[in-house]
Image 1 (cartoon, rainbow, N blue to C red):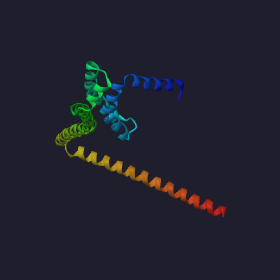
Image 2 (tube, helix red, strand yellow):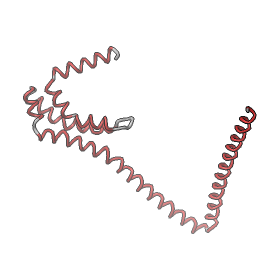
Image 3 (cartoon, rainbow, N blue to C red):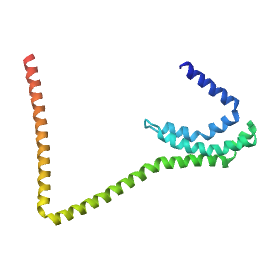
Image 4 (cartoon, one colour):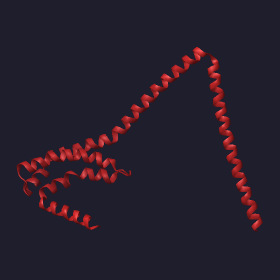
Length: 178
């Protein structure tokens, strides 16, 4: 640890002890965020951020109650043992989980729907063009597709020929070494 990191850690420890009732509520209230952070196996840990943001909002309701009424160990313990406070803190974290798991699926659904709609419009436009310009337009498209497929086959054959040449050269090189 660098000296600045050590100083920061000591400052957090001192603040946690100085504001012990707040620390109690924060530790109990932020457990869903810790679970979200450590269960997320992605590199960016966005699950912890999403759940944590909403978890903090629910925890702030309980913390405001602690700070406004009485900032003491006994009152913090009373708040922690109240099931309604747990419901508030953890239900906001549950909303964070729903957002984290639901928004990507919703976005994918919207994207696929938009792409399908665009494909339908393009197919209608293509059918109108073929109707207007005749089968010649379709024949040109078929020729282009056949040319692309022939190009692909030629690339594969070249790649295969290069591999065979490499194998022959390896076999020839090892026979000369023997």
